[in-house]
Amino acid sequence: MFIGEYNHNLDDKGRVAIPAKFRVMLKAGAVVTRGLDNCLFLYTKKEWQKLADKLAKLPISKANTRAFARLMLAGAMDVDFDNQGRIMLPEYLRKFAGLKKNLTMAGLYDRLEIWDQAAWNKYKQGTEKKSSDIAEALGDLAV
Image (tube, rainbow, N blue to C red):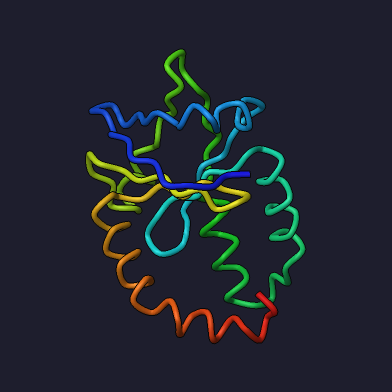
């Protein structure tokens, strides 16, 4: 499972090192795609296949399901690790997420999220301020 926050730098060629503790889980392959909230999602091949299967079963007659499937599937890219444990983030995905030099990787159980560090800090601060309200709303879900 992916958990924790890790800060890394994006190099001039668009490569970023993945935390060493996660490389073993991603060794069989990984997929990066557009995420939500202006970040990127990085999945293991196995988790990606589960998500892709769910998306393929959504009704294509609904505009929102078509749009979400396009966002996730058309933006996806297989990524490979180099000898230093880095992956290449395609330019179109870096642009989508507004990635600059400093990045934060946030582990969220079945995926890693890749954020521009300043955007992550702003998002996190806003969420922390609303944490009681969020917890209250999630109470109905037995969380």
